[in-house]
Length: 286
Image 1 (cartoon, rainbow, N blue to C red):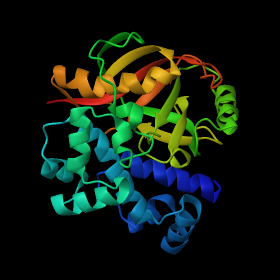
Image 2 (cartoon, rainbow, N blue to C red):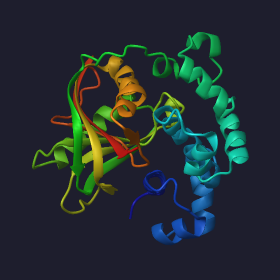
Image 3 (cartoon, rainbow, N blue to C red):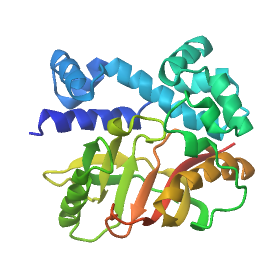
């Protein structure tokens, strides 16, 4: 039987994969075979906030990407995407980012100097201040692809991705990956939006069957934008900004609700300044 910490992490992954569905404590209790009381208490002990507050916060954080990728959508439309009324969405957004969504969008549209508006989100400077309309040189190829649903054998990690423990996790994953399949990194949060110590990651590889000692996560299929990235780690956020802010809209595409992921031919070396991977961004047609 998995320890309670890993079980809570699996619940967090399930929530993030079904973020805009109606999720209840009763459903989670039944699905993961824990009493409601035990689940509620342990979730708060491990994550630091109660389950309902976590779901609300993640929906608001996720809405940032919808606001970015759909600049002409009304706040009412964005609120509906998150399952809120316009008034409730604006109130909850302000709790998280200390601004109304309309104020955030105005800053984003104008490409203001972030230092003049630093209260919106302390880690967000690089994300909103990229003004280069040219294709980033780190992108070696870009196009769309239909991807089948995939079962990922994985270790779930909650915390700062640059912690030394992540290197050990990748080495463990490498030992399990006897068929040397591509490695998968699913980031449920972006440290540009979420506290860097409160991010959730799934590290693994494609698996035909479950493996004892590893979690199993189902990655939704569908249409993705696939980007071959090769270059500096520091340029990755700028590349994402160019894709979401300029490329998708120019191609008549929208970022949708599924999670994005990276695919690596070998385990990523966190000590290296350069990165080579295939970025998969879920899309739909505008």
